[in-house]
Length: 231
Image (tube, rainbow, N blue to C red; front, side, top):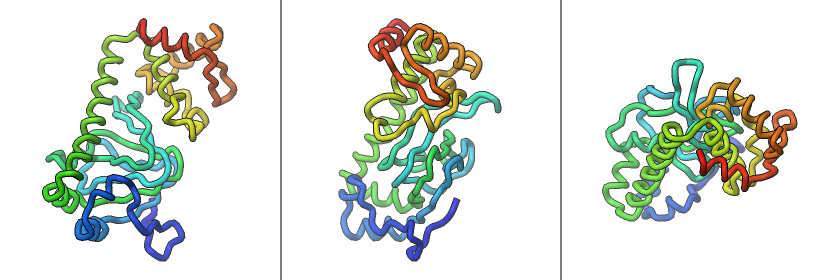
């Protein structure tokens, strides 16, 4: 992790994300005065589950993996976070620790925003507050969907869900499979690494996907969708 000053070439002058366009000039200055720009290297943790937080993160560049830590050997991957998204919004609503961990899959440039300053803006700007609440609600919905898949879907359905999610159009500008290990993919499906690898090979044998080193090509997405629906 590296703090970025105004004299560094990585420095990003303004907050150009659409959500910040809802702020008044005074509010922008308040947020600007409370933020620190940080560069995270690939593989570095942006947040650590269970640690105290006094700030909210805003991802400007790069992609990040969000996950819940398990017993030390097993994690559960929740989602991929792209530029323009917040991390740690629960810090605004009386949650003093991070509920999850995040790790950078690429080099990531981030704003660290002091939560007290951000909360003050929420109190006085209704449109911005609604935008933040919408994002927080979306994060909760992702968690609920993940729990439902774990509870009600069998291994084949969970692996199909993981592959469909990671190959979806929202990530078409990234080659996610090249950035993820087989363990990462298994963690998205809530499976052990060994079971995940066996299922991937089984899907390849059935002609659903093609494995080539770290690369995975989806050959028959419609059949994966059918497996996902049947659970």
